[in-house]
Length: 116
Length: 116
DNA sequence: TGCTTGTATCGACATTCGTCAATGTATCTC
DNA sequence: GAGATACATTGACGAATGTCGATACAAGCA
Image 1: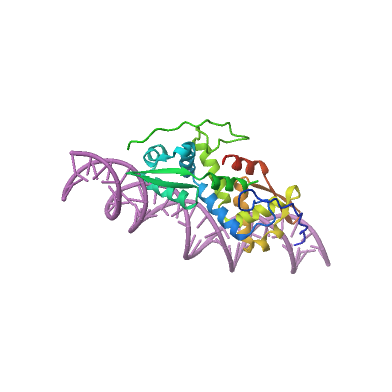
Image 2: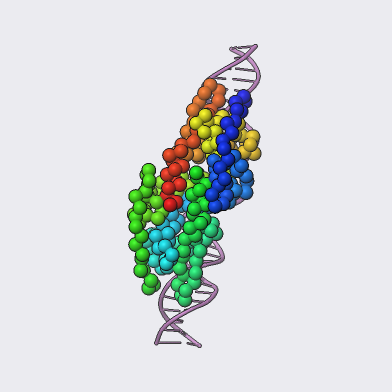
């Protein structure tokens, strides 16, 4: 071992929340929180679900409209939606018999900013 | 099942490559490729490694300077670096006994743009 | 009250993942 | 060549993940 000539980059103040990966100060808490977010995005089915929910905008989308296009069983879709919920990427609202899902734009923005 | 009143959002032409999650046209290939990228980011240790590599800029960073700060064994760090490499987020270069890692900014940018 | 429908939860299973000790492979130095 | 050093690969193991069928739980309707 010899190298160790660390080039100290300027630590930009991260927008909104959390530090960016390019920030010098990148502590364990930030890393764990970000990792959770990216883990929720690390599945094609969830990306497709998130895409549909995002496209629905502020009007949201009914779970009944997500199952068939996803090509997965209803319990599997429900499971993936829970993962997205737990990661804070979406929120749900019960309306009578149906459940509607909405994207949490700020959280998405936070994950986006961390990749600056 | 009753809802199904899909609000058709405008499909923005994604910058650089790959469609954004907000795009109407979000096919399986895009989803799989993006999911691979996010999966590489879905671990605190890898985020920390990527952070250090990113901070090193174009001068890159030696593996010998990544092991100790990560708090993981050398084989574990080597494993995570391979995951980042396979995901196209970093590239490596052998210089004598040492190995230097560099970030692939375009790939990071692509993952960032998909969260528009 | 009972039946139907939409969604969530549970249980099981195969697969993938994170981790480390041990080992392999270059490269450098003496 | 012999030893030392830097990094990658292998093998093993427990933990987490994606999937589905079966089941539970509500809410609406007859």
